[in-house]
Image (cartoon, rainbow, N blue to C red; front, side, top):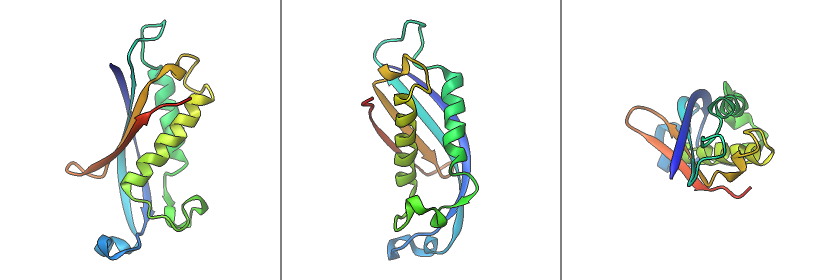
Length: 134
């Protein structure tokens, strides 16, 4: 399996509901480093997994939708704990939709799977990965 990854970052504020979150129940900020890995069993006709430039631009666009926002105020996340795991799945879904729309090029539809990892710090991170059905 071949893979290519791109990386960027974003900053948010949010709070959580539930005793398990302790002090994180209060409003706090987070800065995430985001890695998106694309996988496919065979290279495309150009000899690549995905166009790195398009993948990087798309990641920047997706993260701009979240960057510098208080996620508690976002209607799309109402009633949802916006945990690192949850946000990884949100970014995955938005990327999958962009792949389906052709934003990553005509051959990106052959990407077999993707993994989105959000690094909270140098010692903690969470990810979401799945096959891509476009």
